Image (tube, rainbow, N blue to C red; front, side):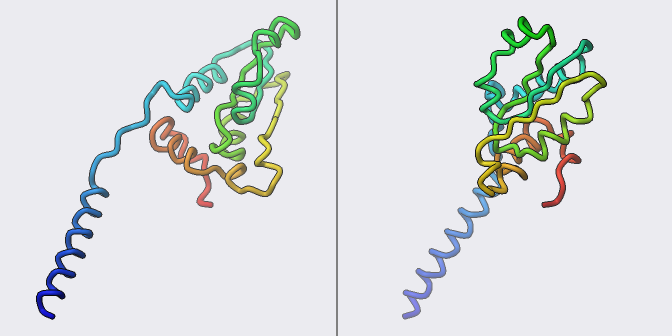
Length: 147
């Protein structure tokens, strides 16, 4: 019986040791060529574009479904496509973009379908938002509430 209990103790200790090694192993940062890193360029465009603008806020539906050149050619307004991923959350997208809206800008909000079905990740953000806050734009952590 004593031998059996020792084996169980060793097994548990090895499991705990592997768990703590896994916790303290540095995680690789996400690749900087992913769509999430486009947020940096989009924020620069939002801050620096001077002329009249039309700003689109949404998820990947805006990122992949909008032809900015067609909008610019037909409306003669500079489009700024802030769409990246619905997992960032609508609150974060609005908080980080609204402060740069100027007089005479047109602000278009086009939420993803998940914002209509009661999924709080679509509004508050999910794991993708954590990636943004810790890897892509850590300076924007103050834009997120505790919830």
